[in-house]
Image (cartoon, rainbow, N blue to C red; front, side):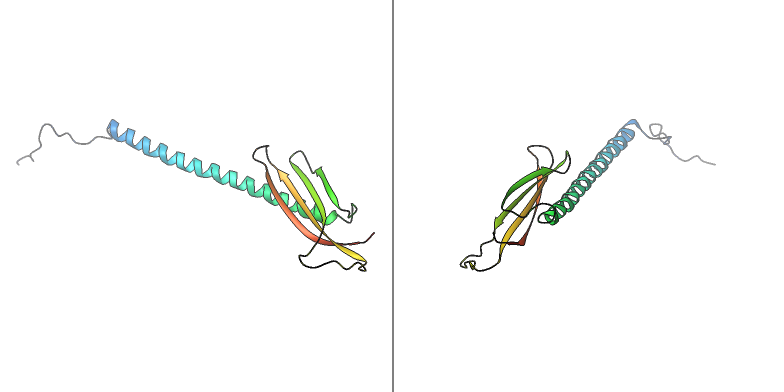
Length: 138
């Protein structure tokens, strides 16, 4: 029985060559770098969303307390919720353009704005909420 022709320079494949292994490692390292970058960005976004949500809740709470726990008077006030979150409140008279407030009205409208700040100096974040409140004149 005749044998099949097999050139001497061609050996049967017994495994991967060094180049194939190196190319596979490069592809794997690039894929892992992309995956880790995505996970890291996801964690940063999640942390930012949690801080924003907490700041909104704190702003709503402070806005609700002005006029109940603290007197409703014109001016600017500030304080700290914690080492991380700080607040500023501003109470100013409400003036609608082109319309005068009647002198005989027993109440006046005030704009109450609360701003909650957080984050490191230079990259500070903030959220503000405003509402109108009625206060007795006098």
